Length: 114
Image 1 (cartoon, rainbow, N blue to C red):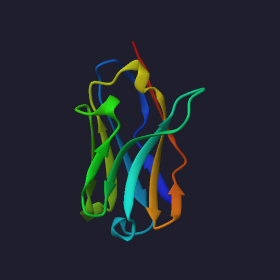
Image 2 (image 1 turned 120 degrees about the vertical axis):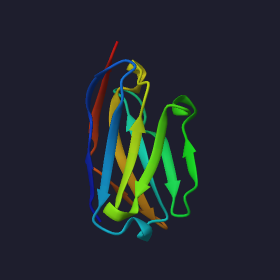
Image 3 (image 1 turned 45 degrees about the vertical axis):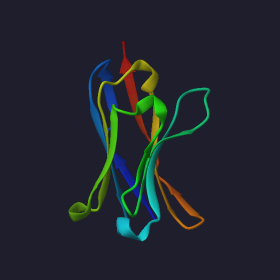
Image 4 (image 1 turned 90 degrees about the horizontal axis):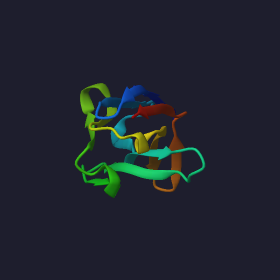
C-alpha cells in the first residue's frame, strides 16, 4: 500500500493549508486513516484520525482549527488546516491501517512563520 501526500508548504501565521493523501487502495479498505506530525526534536504525534465509519478525533491543540475529511469519489483524505500557528511547524505524515498492518506516507513539510 502506498500513501501519496501533497499540499505542504510555507505559510504565515494565521494562514491555511490543505494536505491531501491518496492511497493506492480504496480508502474503504482501511480501518482508519489519520495524519500525524513530527517536529524537530519531538516525538511523532497524532493530529487527526478518521475511522472507516466516519468517526473523527483530533489532537486538543488543533481542535477547531483542523478538519480531517475524505472524498470518496477521488479516493483521497484531506487535512484542512486553518489559523496556523508557528507551533504547527512539522513534517506531516499520512497514516492508515488494516487491523495491525500500518502504512505511512513519505511526509510533507509544513512551515508556519510568525
